[in-house]
Structure formats: C-alpha cells, structure tokens
Image (tube, rainbow over all chains, first blue to last red):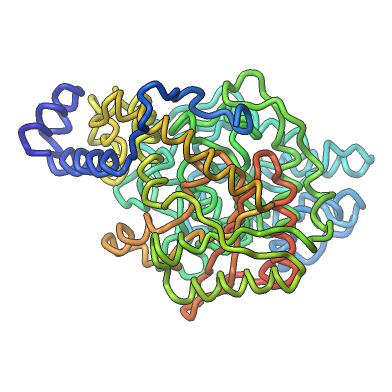
Length: 60
Length: 469
C-alpha cells in the first residue's frame, strides 16, 4: 500500500488527527492490515455462508 | 479458628484454602492479611495491581469469617481471595482497561463472572494490570506500569492478562480472572508457569467485560493448579441469556472428572505448529516431546495430527479481531489517538484498513477451519501442542517483544472456539517457565482438565514456584 493510499484510507476512516500526530503508527497499521488480508484464503464458492460467525458446537 | 503460619499461606491452593476455612481450621482474615502483607512487599516490583484496596478485602474477609464460624458457607470458594483483570467490572471500582481513555470509568455493577465468584464466597483483592484494552503489549507510555514476571522481573509476564498471571504465580492470590481473545489467558499462564484455561466460546458469560472482539472474546480462570482451575470453572460456567454469545448447554462436574483414568485416551500431537509453522526454541521442543512421552507412559495413545497452519489462523484472528475492535474504538481513535499507548494504537487502528469483504472472507474461512479442526477431533479426544515458542523475553527490549509475541499457537482456539488450557511444561536453562497447551472438543473441558491434571500429577509442575520473596 503506497503512502498516498494509506493517507486517503486513513482520512476516510476519520483518522486525520492520528495521521497528523502519529503518521508512522498509521502506516504500520495499514501494513499490518495488508499483510493479514494477503494470508486469508478465499472460499471458492461465492455462495458460501459466513454466518453464524461463532456458535460453538452447533451445525457442524 | 487456627490462624496458620502467615509465611506459608500464600502458597495455599484455592481448594485447600476453601477446605480449611469450611473446617474452621483457617481464618479468611488471616489469609487475606498474609496476602496483603505479601502484596505490599512484592507488588512494587511486579506491578500486578492497578488498584488494590486491602481495607475492602479485609472487610469482606471478616464477613466471610463470621459466616464460616456459624457454618454458613456461601459456596465452594468461601473466603478465597481472587484478583480481577481490569477490563472486568467490579461494582463501585473503576474499570480502566489500563488506559488513560477510561480513567474514572466507575462500574455500576459486577460483571456476571464476578457476581458468580462472589456468590461462591470469593473475596475480591483488587483490579489487575492488563495490556491496554487487552491488546498490544507491555507498554511504558500508560498511566500505570506494565506487570513483570515473578520468575525474573526483567522479563515480561505475557499478556494481556498480565497482572493475573504475575499475581497468581507470585502468590499474591490463588486465583484470578483473565480474558482471552488471541491467547490472553494462556500467554501469561505460559510465561508465569501457572494454569490458564480459555473455555469453549459461550461457556462463561462476558457480560460486564469490556469487549475487544465480540466473536473471539472469552473469560477464563487462572490458577496455580489444575484442580483450582476446575473448581473456578465450575463457578463461572453457565448460560447467561443477556450475553448474545452465551450457550445453553449442560456444564459442570469438572472437579469430579479430574482423576478419572486416562488410559486409552487418544491425544493428537500438533507437531507442525512448533516444528514447521513457527519453529520453537529447542528447549520448548524438548519439553513438548517430554510431555508427549509422559502421557504415553500414563497410558494415553499419542499420534500426530495436522491442522491448518498457524500463519492462516493468525491472519483470520487478526482480520476478525481488529475489524471488531475498530467498531469499538473508532471514535476514541479519531478524537484521542494520543491517549493510547503506541502498541495498542497501532493494533487498534489496523481495523480501519480492512474492507467489509475482508471481514466476510475471514468469517467464511473461519467456518471452514472450524470444520477442519472438528474432523481431527473426531479421531482424537484431546490435542497437545505448543503454547509459546519461546520463554518470556526481557520486558525492556521492544525488538525481542515484537519478534516473540506472535510466536505462539493459541489463536487457533480463539478462531474455532474450542477449549484450550496452557500450563507449565518445565523450566528453561535460564529459569523461566516453558509451556504446553491441551485443547479439546466443544464443552468438553472435563477431558481437557483431566489430561492437564494427568500431566501435572506425573510431572509435579504444580510444586514449582518462582524464587521471588
């Protein structure tokens, strides 16, 4: 994610103050998000249900 | 009522203390006084407490003693002291979450887990240090210092339930409450050499606990012995209709199941977690092999099993946790970013950079991963794996903290919601605890605790205490 994109997304999220005061922290946060998303394997079936997000022991 | 020897009382287990109080052989007042004296002596070095009010604890102890003397016991923890992680509400006390953001946030009522402990007779000793809002790491830019490891105060005690782990291990109280969203009960249990259980998602109410991530948060017991953990869980478990994540399932009888025969139980050893996914320090690997051999000698059948990779579990945990946490912290991060510690600010702002699609993809994959773990748990009764890949590093070395904190195998069971317990597996050459983790089927905490007890009994790890005095 380049600097301009990070700044755009941060402002869109209302993080203008954080961007002004802690630009390196905002950049680290953006890179962490990018890294995590890259490791999530996407389901092949576009109809796959994500729900329920967590209901231990039911429907499995 | 005998008052015991104050110098020895701090290593009493919760079960032994409760038994002695019920038998009128021990005064809760003397027990609490002994712990207050120990806290005054040791906590300036440990920072386990954010708030300790000895007068309130003593008042509760006097009441408990008066009740015990006339045979009126509130429950199985009558007169037993407990510490409460400071993201959990205790009526009339601030719930600060170790953050400047919530200084002065007075709780109107006890969290359900605190209600249950008090209902069973436990005495609240105070509010305990945590990583800010149960995320981040040991931070020196907060209103209170971070807790330290009683095995070596130059090292971190794990987190986020850091005061809970340090305090239980140091003998400041025999039991504590922690919370676990990515491993925060089991990390301090691993670093401090105690027993920390993350129960099945939904077994213990989260009402009155400041949320970090709604679908990953768990409340769990932290103790010095497996028996105390089972005893505490018996008090904490149960359906709460006001907690949307709470499950209406049968529960209990954890203590009675502890000493069932373990011969023939099938143990799945998840070697790839610490041999391939995140290669562990050699002494951690050796300790895990020793645990596996010991369980075999106890008559269990140990076989290797394969789960999804730690890298993917961690990514799913991060996307879901940080997305949900962003929804909680958005306004404060927008308006007061400077009131967070740097470590938690970086973690919490990460949620701003995920899309709705990212969250949904992670939720879908989460269900697939749950199914993959369930398949394995049809073939074995319990899983054995690493908890931490390294002993606790020094608390004053940010680069070491950044490198070692993610080297763990706890997040899989937050993602899937299965019960998991972490405990001591031995000591490193440097005298710091090494750890092991057991996980099991949904709501089968009884078997997880049973196997943990078998390891504890065979190894004697419950007799090891830090040298701090």
